[in-house]
Amino acid sequence: MQINRLSDALGAEVIGVDVANIDDDAFEAIHTAFLEYQLLVFRDQALAPEPQIAFSKRFGPIETRPDRPFTLPGYPEVTILSNRMVDGEPVGVISAGDFWHTDLSFGEIPCRATFLHALEVAEEGGDTEWSNIYTAYDTLSEGVKERIADLRGIHVFDRRRNKRAQVDVQFANKAEEVYGVPIPDAVHPIVRHHPETGRKSLYISPRFVVGIEGMDDAKAQPLLDELFAHQVRPEFRYRHTWRKGDLLMWDNPCLIHIGRGDIKPPGIRHMHRTMVLGDRPR
Ligand SMILES: O=C(O)CCC(=O)C(=O)O
Image (cartoon, rainbow, N blue to C red; front, side):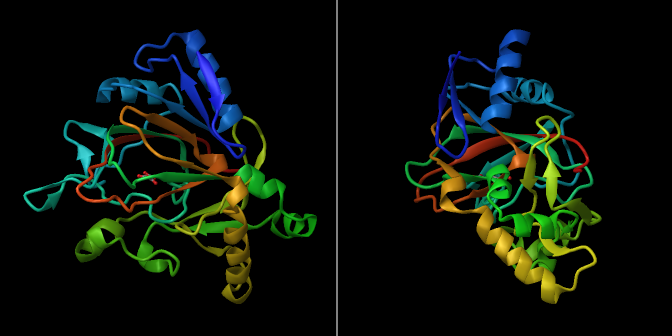
């Protein structure tokens, strides 16, 4: 197994691993690299849904939601992200991550790791970008660190309640069905401790955090704007141009990410996503 760093900010490429066939030693090495680099890229994986689910499960309990749109038939654990249309209908979620976010932070127990496997990639467009929120926290001034030390962010799933994240055009005419699902808001520390490394991260995102518990919007919104801008400074980021067969896994407690879209027609980008749950943020 060879591990090559991908950028100063985060990420490493893991060469020489077939994730469908790893033994416990390989798993340990991958796990260690995951904690060190936060995002891992496995190239040239021909991964059926079962081994993707099995590999994901090594990192935590798999997440499923019965009413999630576009799960793979027979595999509620796998969500299809795709811009393919069949008979005028999309076969997957077209723009899954169109605003900076960390997965499932609107839940009481958010996502620990996300696994995204590229079955088809477009010649142009469809990159994904991550930003390191460990570094974002570490580089805050001492004054800001003190100010936010005990604050908690309000994480909301329903885009209609978030002035920074408009309703996705794909779901505009069924907004109630897609965003009106009864998911209670979650309140999480703005400074989160990573469940394994213990490091602190700036655990907020413009897609899900709409306010600060117990703070008037007149104060909270400018503070959030400042923190959101800081989170995505260019030097904290890594942008990935996908190759067919890539499997990426990323560590949600310490990264935020965004799907850049802009796929040039007639390019098709077709992916399978699995997610595993982690701890209650603290
Ligand atoms: O498709 C992408 O590039 C990003 C997907 C994403 O943000 C997600 O699934 O949470």
